[in-house]
Amino acid sequence: MLIKRKRGWELPENAATPEHLFLSRRRFAQAFAAGAIAAGPILLPALAATPASAQDKAADPSAKLYPFKQNMRYRLDRPITGEELATTYNNFYEFGSQKNIHKEAQKLPLRPWTIKVDGMVEKPVEIGIDDLMAKMPLEERLYRHRCVEAWSMAVPWGGFAMSEFVKLCQPLSQAKYVRMETFKDPKVAPGQHQTWYPWPYVEGVTIEEANNELAFMVTGAYGKPAPAQNGAPLRLALPWKYGFKHIKSITRVTFTDKQPKSFWEEIQGREYGFWANVNPKVPHPRWSQATEMPLGSKERVPTLLYNGYGEFVADLYKGMDEKVLFM
Ligand code: MTE
Image 1: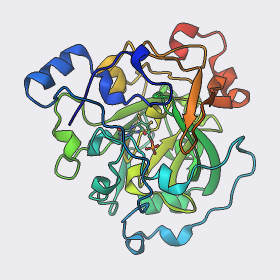
Image 2: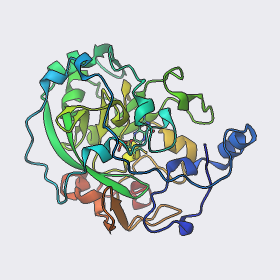
Image 3: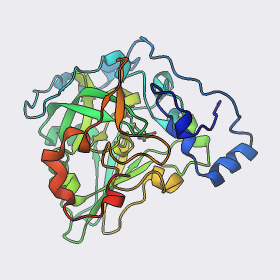
Image 4: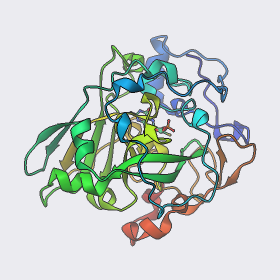
């Protein structure tokens, strides 16, 4: 793995900044000492036109459910990103810290797949992804997706409202947060041998955010089951927040009264907070968030407050401290 630590002001205007550069000094030093990180140039991934997914769709029992009916309430102000781009330019650190992990990610077995629901709920359960999908109102939504690294996409996701999932889980009134966890299996995910990362990947939202109409649990993309590299068989989409909140390949959901500490917050809390709402006026400590680069385009476009979804979510944050809301 070739990593060069760059300062924000060294970034070329059109380059995304890989999150693997943001390891805390301590973790970085440990990894460096262990020989896991070598100094060298950043290898910018080619936005290659390779086939989307090698996944055997026939083995996925949910394939026959697609395509879902589109919910017309959620519209885009920009073209949908090409499927090949959206499925070959990914962040999924379990499979490596480069963007081109889509082939490696095919090793993730997507069935059987069970999601454990525990913590402050009426009754802890384990539910298979296909049983869960059978209980949920499935729909397609066109959402923008803005990475903290300043690239963006627009994707037709398939899935169901997170509020429906919360209802199914029957949380107790004391539950204030939803904590989610990705699988941990270094045998299939080589990135998980990198012990300086705090595996498994963890993310969290408040119950109010989970119940906001925009919060969406994703099972599909582009009218079919989502490929492994996009977080199959179950990931989150919170289009008003930076992409690192969109946890992939979820295996556990815990209702809790304690604010969860997320993967990136654990690594570098000064740069990646719990809220992570998009705001063009609040720069990342090392680069501007004023504009973004839509994948497939050559020109940057202005970034929008709450990624353009303020009408749906701004009320959630009334009166809260703006110093933490946007990091
Ligand atoms: N979830 C897991 N489990 N592991 C990851 O490395 N990366 C996050 C998020 N979810 C990540 C993850 C980041 S940084 C981003 S920007 C989005 O996934 C990328 O989603 P995409 O590859 O579908 O565009």
